[in-house]
Length: 81
Image 1 (tube, one colour):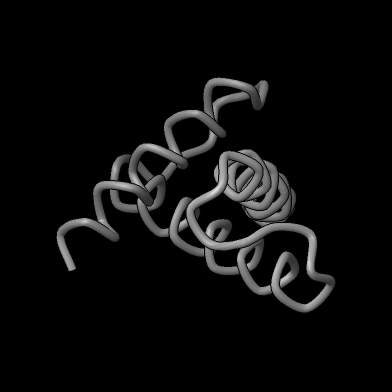
Image 2: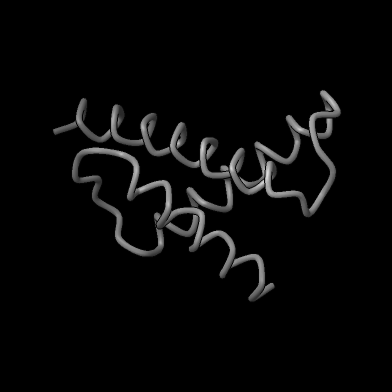
C-alpha cells in the first residue's frame, strides 16, 4: 500500500511539474491524481497491449494520465471559482 502511495506521489509530482498553472489540492490531490493516472494508463496499456507491467513506458504513460486528470481537475475548479 505504501508503495502505491509513493509511486502515485512521484507520478503526481512529475505531472504537476509539467503542467502549467496553480492547481489547489496539495499533496493529497497530487497523490490521488498520480494514482488515478497510473491506474488509467496501466489499464489502457494492457487493453491495447502497448507495454507490460514494470516497463518505463508505463511510467511515462502514467505521467501523461495524471496530467490529463490534473487538466480536467483544473477545468472543474476554475469553473467553480
